[in-house]
Image (cartoon, rainbow, N blue to C red; front, side, top):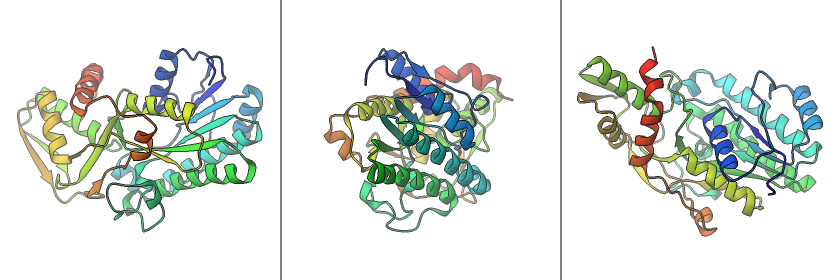
Length: 312
């Protein structure tokens, strides 16, 4: 990567995309190509083709996606499948057609089978059924991996894929109907503390185990891969540490300063009971996460306090 390389970050206003932009700028990369969804609808093939033809990006970080938590994935199944398939197919094909030097596609840990052995290794992909609640999103992400793999095999494109674990950080989504578990818990407990509520409801039993990574660590890993990794097999990106939802809730409770009771609603779905990424391959290349869960949540809570305080 050259500091003057033309770099397109698809999805630059999202949590992951904005972290990539921050990381690139901090490292001295200045020739960044950014478009909002109003300026460029990545689901529209003609618009995407014209954009690549005109802008001629050399490197692409494909972080654009329709994302959400368990409820959103299960409710808007067609939207999650269609939108994500169209985005990745249009961008990857245009990258091939207009000679992009290297593309990095962002997947998700939900690509793995529901009952896959733990921790999750890259070779477990497509070995058993998926978790039903987010199956459409997972299928779309698997298709993106296979697109990168297939364009590499057929056309020789240097398209790689990375599968991040559960993420949190600046520009996360705090909508309680669509948010992932960590920001949803943070908002619930903040609002409960401000209002003086005595209880906070948490969906599920609290027993599922999850791995979380600060999005700035992910951005660092992605730049590392863009510089140093050129192989076909996708790469897991995780922190290597797991925590139960109950433990996570207790940690957030302490950071936010909520003093009430945590009530677990077992009528709500737990999702997969354990999901830990095996990031051995990435670690063997010399990369590891640097932000602890406690420090990361503290920083995110301070960063978003004024936003959370103004949420209706």
